[in-house]
Image 1 (tube, rainbow, N blue to C red):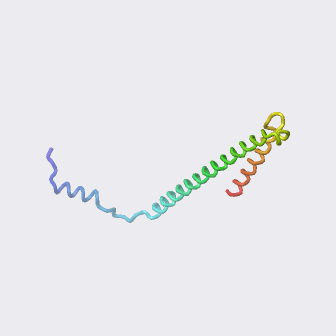
Image 2: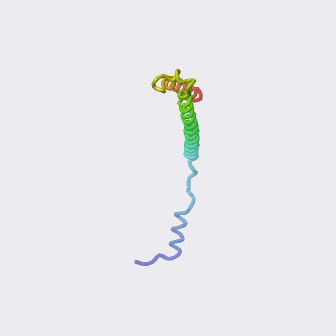
Image 3: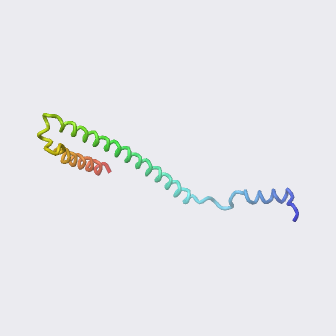
Length: 107
C-alpha cells in the first residue's frame, strides 16, 4: 500500500470541509431555538416554584412551632385541650388550605 501524497490529502480535506451546497434549514433552526427557550422558561418556573414552596414550608413550620409554644402557655392551655395539640391541627388545616388556594390563584 502506498502512502497518499499531500495533494490527495488536501483534495480530500477540501471536499470534507467544504461549506454545504444547499441553504441552511431555517425552520429547523427556529424550532431548535424555540425548544431551547421553552426549556429555559420551564427551568425558571420550576426554580421559582421550589423556592416559593420552600418558603411556604418554612412558614408553615414556624406557625406550627408558634402554635405549639402558644398552646403550652398557661393562659391558652384550656384552648389546647388535653392532648396538648387540640387547637393546632384545625388551624394548620385552614392555613394549608389557604396556602393552596393562593397557589392555585397565582397559577
